[in-house]
Amino acid sequence: MRADSLVILDFETTGLSPDQGDRAIEIGAVKLEAGEVVAEFQALMNPGFSVTSFIEGYTGISNAMLAQADSCREVMESFAEFIADNNLIAHNASFDRRFLDAEFSRFNHVYQGDFSCSLLLSRRIFQDAPSHSLGALVNYINLSGTGDFHRALYDAQMTAKLWMAMLDNIGERYGLFDLNFEQIQQVCKTPKKSVHKRLESWQ
Image (cartoon, rainbow, N blue to C red; front, side, top):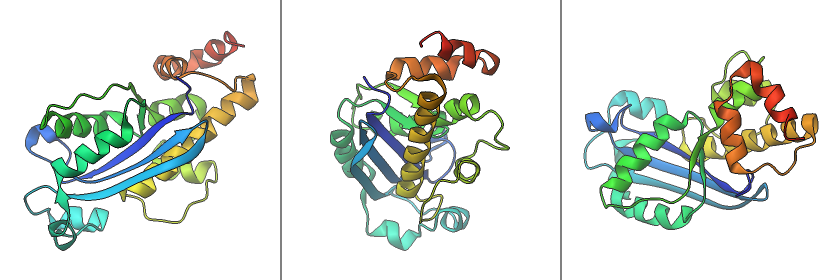
């Protein structure tokens, strides 16, 4: 499948680890087809317990907001339909994947697509960036956006812009404008010093 046709997702959560009982409290996602945004998904979800004041301050998501939200299961069942069999991207994907797997496991759903990481790709494409956090990369390559980081849909929207900027960078530097998802996964696993040679080999 094409590297520019997939779903970019982001979670806001009650903490760092679903293994320690943390749950998702917001999901945001952007669906790309041939590099164009064709759909978006955003929903708060009620984890069944109160979030800490730190999480409220960090995300701007209050317990009052969550009290009005659908349950995690209801939201994730809808999200499963949204992603269908698309491949998936997140920034620092190991974090988001843990929560996606944990929430889906609660109703025995298994998604079909593969998962890759925009942070890993950015370390190989923008090797001179001072930081590879999403906010730093947005500034580094001057991406435009109006919203608040640490809200799921805005983070997903900016990750989608970053993803396309990286694919465009590869296209402009190497003439590779139609990479598939499996090739991008290979780039993410390639040592930084060998990325140039890897991309050159596909020209």
